[in-house]
Amino acid sequence: MSSNTMTLYLQVWRQKNSNEAGAFSNYEVANVSPDMSFLEMLDMLNEDLARQGLDPIQYDHDCREGICGACGVVINGEPHGPGKQTTTCELHMRNFKNGDAIVIEPWRVKAFAVLKDLAVDRSAYDKIIQAGGFIKVNYGNAPEANSLPVGKDVADLAMDMAACIGCGACAAACKNASAMLFAAAKISHLALLPQGQVERKKRAANMIKAMDELGFGNCTNQGLCEDACPKGININAIARLNREYLDSILTCNF
Amino acid sequence: MSLSVIKAFRSSIFKKIWVALSGMFLCIFLLGHLAGNSMMIINPEMFNRYAHTLISNPFIYFAEAVIVFFFFLHIFWAIKTNVENWRARPISYHKRATKWDLQSLASATMPYTGALLLVFIVKHIIDFKYGPYYTISYEGVQMRNLYQLLLEYFGNIHNVIAYVIAMTLLSIHVLHGVWSAFQSIGINRSTLNTTFRRFSYLFSVIIVISYITFPVWCYIQGVK
Figure 1 (cartoon, one colour):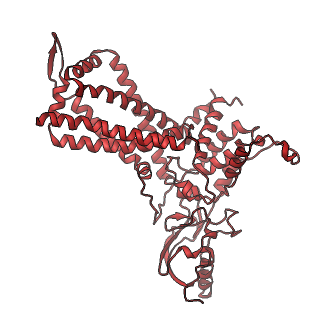
Figure 2 (cartoon, helix red, strand yellow):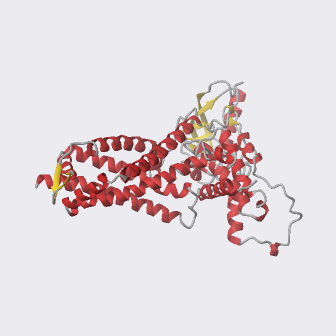
């Protein structure tokens, strides 16, 4: 190990299952390389815990390259930690200093039950998608690229909205535990493109109805969600969602 | 209208639309009240006559009812939203990264500045509308001398300080409120966001400076 490795003092939320109350446990992790990712640091701690015959810390992860949306913990009060537009898996330990104390908590959102330790059940987001975040009509094969009736600016914006990976950081960051940025990104993405027009009028109404029933909070326009979003989705999307919803409720005739 | 539409009026999005629309109305009322108040600086007789015209007109009951209705709408939905929001996170974070810029602070403290403003408004109405009744006569028409009450009330430095604090809270409240209303009713977008932010700062500064002028001016009149 090189001389610039760090020793970190972790305070990690441990919880057996969704029914039992959790509590913080303290861990000291030595020999952390600044080149490690945050999850690699947790892996190292877990190996150590396993060697001691202790229960390793449970957390979600999959691709480890910031595109799947599986990982995500709250690090020192920030979902996905201090990096801008990074997921937890992409966060490098060089963002921390030797001797730092780090508090690690799960997403604290009523609609996301803690399954174990830092892993939460995010199927509430799937339920919002199931309520209308899809297209039912068949558009056939990919059309000739030069004949697409979509402007460059609109295509770019729709792509920005489609970048949402559904990680849950927006609801975790929101002081009201609201899923509004997630719903806004999904609704915007489909509303901006021709393929999304068929169900457009019903989509916002149905998805918001599902979101409200799942027990997420209400948006109060503070904007903590956009700061936490690993994909940099802007809260202008929420204004678009509000427009889509108004249109949906006031003019939909089916 | 189908039942689902009525239900939608209670959805998370309509909750903030109600707060936004009533808030916009209350902001317009603030400007009207400001215009009326400015007459005290121009001329005491003009101010008293303006107040008399307002009070003696039967239309005032309707106007008062409308204002109370919008206040009720604003407060009712704001409380409901906040209660639901607290319930949406039963276990709070042990550690929370805080943003300290003014807009964020204004936004995070909306329920508290709002509650304090409600206390202020109740006191404001008791102190003025239901306060001491002095009379004055202009060309044989007897009317309430509100100008004298103002000088007397703001002759007390404690009242001046309380008023200045209340107006500072109000400016913090509208700093978030004005921009937020444009966002909530869905007319905000990337090309207008900065404009709405600036407008909300401008509105907030205009409100705090102009409203603070009145008690300070009255206090100085008393000292003279």
